[in-house]
Length: 462
Image 1: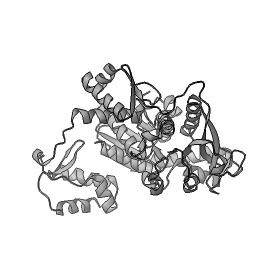
Image 2: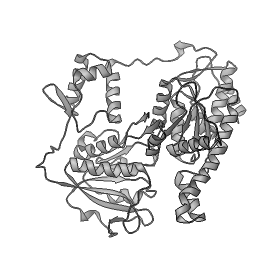
Image 3: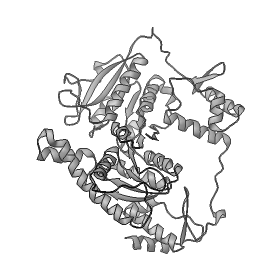
Image 4: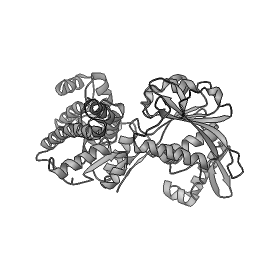
C-alpha cells in the first residue's frame, strides 16, 4: 500500500514547489492508515522527490521554491484578536472575573498599551466587554449578589432506569462538582434529571418520568452527553425550550444534529473530541525540542483516539502510530470482563486484557527503534501510560529517557498521572463549566456566532 501511495502521488501532475495533499486527505481518499502515508512521504523525502516544511506541509522538489508558497501576513490587530480568543477558550480569561490590567495584557500579547486599549474598547462597543475606569470585564446581563433570587436551571446527566447515577471517571465527577459549585456562585437552583440510555426517557432521581412542562420557571438547561450513546431523546426533550440550552458534547463534532445547530438558543461545548488535544500536546513536545514520537492506543476504533493521532500529526511532529482498532474505549474491555468473571474481578481482568495488547505493541515499537535514538511515547490516556510504567517496573519492557522531552505523556491529567509524575493533557473542565454558565446568563454573547465552542486545555507537568 505504501508503494501504491507513492506511485499515485508521483503520477499526479505537478511541478516543483506545488503543495502535496495533506496526510488526512490521502488517508481518507485511499482508506489507508496515517503510518502508511507517513512512510510513503518519508521515502519520497529520502529520494529527494519532496521536501517537508514544519507546520506548512510537504512540497514537490528537493528544495522549496519559496515564491510558490503564498505568505499570509497577519496584522497586529488580527494576531491580537486570535490570541485573545485563544486565551478565552483556554479559560485564562474568565467571564466571571475582571480582565488582568492593561499593562499585563500588553506584555502578554507583545503589543503597545495603546493598541491593546483600542482593541479592548472595540470589544466594549461590540457589547462583549464593559469598562469601569481603567478596568475591563466581560459584559453580564445578570447581576449576581446576595439578594439575587434563585433561578431554576435544569441539569441532566445519564442515569440508570430508576434514576440512579454511578460515576465512571474523574472527569465526570469533576464536571458534576464544578457545575454545582458554579450554580451556587451564580445563584442558580439546579433541578437534577437523568437520561436513561436504554429507555430514552428523562426521569428525576426517584425514577419518575418527567416532561418539559413540569418546569415552567426554568431559565436555562445544562445537558451532559458523556456516555450517553442515544443522545437524540435528550435533545428532543428540550427542542421546544425558549431559554438557553448549553450542551457538554462528548461525541464527534459531525454528530451534532443540524436541527439543533440552527436553534438560536442552543450552544454546544466540546473539550475532548477533535484535533485540539493532540495539537496542543504536539506543541508542548515541540517546545521541549521533540521532533519524533511513538503514539499508542488500544482503543483506536474510536474517533477520539483517531482525533488525537491526527492532532499530533498536524502539529508538525513525525509520528509512529501503534494503534489497535478492535475496541473503542476502556469500557469495551470491562464489558468482556463482566461476561467472564465475577463483579469484584472485573477491573483486574479488564486491565490484564489491555496489558497483554499493550505489551505486544510496546515490544514492536522497541524492536522498530533498534539502533535509533529513543523518542517519547505519547499514550492515548493516562491508563495506558500507567500500564507501561507497571510493565517497566515488572521488567516486561524497558523504558529509557529520550534525548529530548519526557519518557511518557498521557491524556486526562488524572489522579494517577500525579502519583506517577506523568505529564498529561488536561481537558480544562473548569473552563468548560465557566463558559457553559456564561452562555446561560448571557445568551446574546453566543447568538449568531459559532455554535460549537472548543475548550482548549494544556499539558500539565508534574
